[in-house]
Length: 168
Image: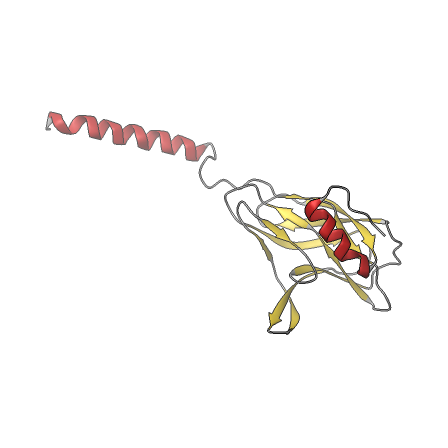
């Protein structure tokens, strides 16, 4: 073997060992558990259904997916996405909602939410617990505060720029 080839070959072997070790301890492409902030649930006004909204952050470098949600009340919850078609739009059930790597899933009336059919009576400021289920991350228990539909835009605006949004 040519002696000139030994240093590059040794460097390549050392790099392979180091990269394998880094991958083995989870340094490459590692999923990290998602995090969620307290959210909001709209108080229904004459409708038999309402919606809940959360912001889910993914600090990892692997995308995750919200695959389902439950709560302690009767009735099945569903994920839904809003689809905009010019000046109009509609919504559709979604089997999953993506939480991008290093990003967030920010639910809102214009994007995505949790459909809550036949909710119990809700009072402004009341807390309701939800459990979010993910493809890669462990289940996450989060709390939503009840707000009137007209108050959600103020709550969402305050949440973007100021701590401690008002509920009402």
